[in-house]
Amino acid sequence: MKTRRRSSSRSKSSGLTTFVRALRFSALAAIALGLASCAIAPSSRYPAKGDARPHEGVATAHRLPIHGVDISKWQGDVDWASLRQAGTKFAFIKATEGGDHIDSKFHENWWEAKKAGVPRGAYHFVYWCRPAHEQAAWFKRNVPQDPDALPPVLDVEWNGQSVNCPKKVPREQALAMIDVMLREMEAHTGKRPIIYTDITFHKEILEGEYNDYPYWIRSTAAEPHVRYNDRRWTFWQFTTTGRVPGVKGDVDRNTFYGTENQWRMFVQSACDPRDHGRLSQQGVCRDMDAVQTASIVE
Image 1 (cartoon, one colour):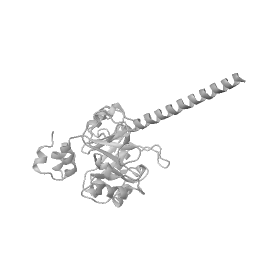
Image 2 (image 1 turned 135 degrees about the horizontal axis):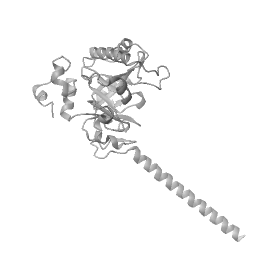
Image 3 (image 1 turned 90 degrees about the vertical axis):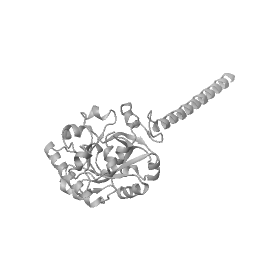
Image 4 (image 1 turned 30 degrees about the vertical axis):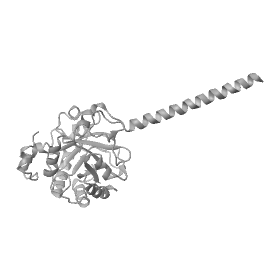
């Protein structure tokens, strides 16, 4: 009888100890997960911003002064005032895709960003199974002509996960479609479009092409020159798991290549400051005052 009671007592004590240890482990794991979700890169200029999965290969992006985000319906309701207060200097907002799809949050995001004072541009996601002129017409139909907006963005990448259009098209066909859409988007907005792309599409289609256009490139595990064969870039998407006040969950984070003064010149002229002298002669860039023009190279 006593042996049984002692055995029972030890069994209960052992079970309780195991349970307590499990609780402690769960609590520590939860804390660690929470800290990881808010991880901040060393030397970050924006301590309120973080990355759920930071990568050391893109550490230099955190030290550049001009940071922004790209937004679509997948970010849900965005608190644009909080986003701006956290140091967000720009946003690219998904507008259209193909020839018949508009992002359900586009108009709300478009006007709320402007009201909060966040410079923003609209982007179109190319659908390779739809004629380019139809896609351009759809973009023009849905994106307002706003002289204060950033240049529009043409998002070109393969979409192998698409149910309806996973195919790749020949290089010549892809370039012909891009030509049409770039021309029509510029005519609609009065600003030379930015080309967004990823590593694979750039290698297969864009290497050596459109050197007079600003590029926004995706590289989340290494610096751009490592992945893009020294392609000069204007914007760099350096993570898809960013954490920024005003957005719940993951958000793509991006950076501009230059200084704060170069950023002001980009916003005013709608041209990469490095190209302003040459492209302004072609009527591509908006005018800047003499002081700004003289300080393009820093």
